[in-house]
Image (cartoon, rainbow over all chains, first blue to last red):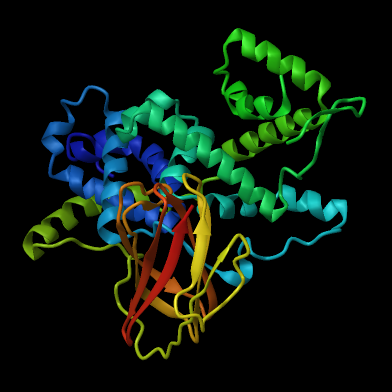
Length: 191
Length: 213
């Protein structure tokens, strides 16, 4: 790209693009949509290029613009709020019981299964979980990014984690059902 | 501390959000409870795996191209008076696709199909998220079908609170396609949730009678 004198827009924004793309990828869950989203944001920003230099803390501001664009796109163009999945490959598949421990361990380590489970979360839950547990945003940073109140975000995060665990249980990936016992075998409480 | 109390605060513990006393109580419980130890270890492991989920990188030179395109696209949009759609947001409908659909609902056991029932019924518990599954059967792959869900008063989709309708574009694979509706009922009622599927050959509407108890 050209130098900052010839292209101040590019010079100002380029350092932020990897982080923006990463956020876009987390929100959209795939590279192609992430590129579209970043491109849309840049197009929008280009018309405000004179304003950009006066923004004090550009990185979080850009994150908010991107998030808002994502929400707009979801509402206007219908990124799928609920996913249709092939019934033959969904959680309805009966988990294979009696699989050997090695296969179970391979399954447990499959990031593909984790991604699949994440995609089955509702949009709000997935975004909350991905921002917090994947990208490491604090609740306060999430509030600044999304404009959603901290209490709501905490509640979404709680439900998202719960749902993700349920999905992984159904897939047989994590969290086998068990009764709760003490180390010496005495019953402590029913789960 | 009992196990169910411990399990309820494990995530806060991992977030380091617990005050001293509940943290100490939890640690005491976990130290003597093998299952809660396992649960804590699994949740820790899940956190680590989530934090390490890779990001697929953008295509080559994407950042440079995107910056260069920004000015160009902006100018084009002004002259077109419209939005330039991304390459992945297809609106071209698949031509001449022969389709047939059946719908069914089932609670928790989603593979049950009942295409012959006039109005499939499901009962859900109030204030609890209950997955109600709608199965669409398509004779062949169908791209860019428009799917709408209409919700009656008192019934919501979890994650989409206060929305009485959702519409989006989706693709159907040949065969059975599952749509999971995480429904939440807020009042005791028995009303229809409607799913409408629009495609080039026509429109199909499905009604599901949801009873909230």
